[in-house]
Amino acid sequence: MKDKLEALITGLEAAKTHSDLQGIIVKLRDLYDVDHVIYHSVNRAGEQYAALTYDPSWVERYIEQDYARIDPVVQGCYQRFHPVDWKRLDWSSPRARNFMGEAADAGVGNQGLSVPIRGPNGQFALFTACSRATDSVWESYSRSNVGDLILVAHFINQKALELDNGTDVQKSASLSPREVDTLRLLAMGYSRAQAADCLCISEHTLRVYIESARFKLAAQNTTHAVAKAIAHGLIVI
Image 1: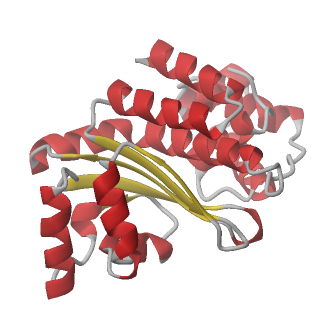
Image 2: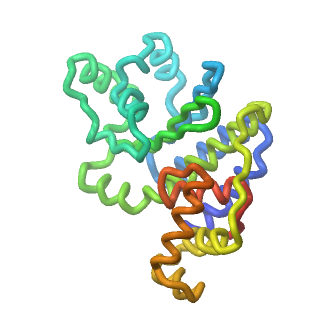
């Protein structure tokens, strides 16, 4: 899986067109064995872009009915910064339940994990993987893959920004050599204890480097910091 993900990220970095990005989305769906993968972004001018694997008729219906107004995933993620499991959203209203039923008929999975992304100048995006798995299977799946999905979400968003004429690409932060070393080891799968040992520093000092890097990168958490550092070319794995 790791080799396939690295190959996919390499392909993503080389993407030159929106068509290339759409192809990456399809490969992600197959790589992570889910029913659908969706990336949807609204830029600072209110213009929308999406790369997804839904049936085109469902996309047309969704836009025609302006379902974003009542979609609990969109509404819930807009108020959050961390990954959102669909089961933890409020689906209790009649409109939400009707929407859920129509979505299910269109092949949208009953399980999903969505990553909210807030880019520069007011850009907002969502990256989602969804499935028709059982609750127990999905709980195990999301727990095992959430780190990868967050990482991929920010890679996809950065590439989409680059393709949007480069107008919203975020400027790279300047990290110290120790901050770079710390994030690179974490990106390679080292635990904090292992990374600290490798750098011959205490875990407390390691946490200082992590928090400093997070602040410079305006990252929501450590995984987000690693994703941003890789996307900006600050670390190489």
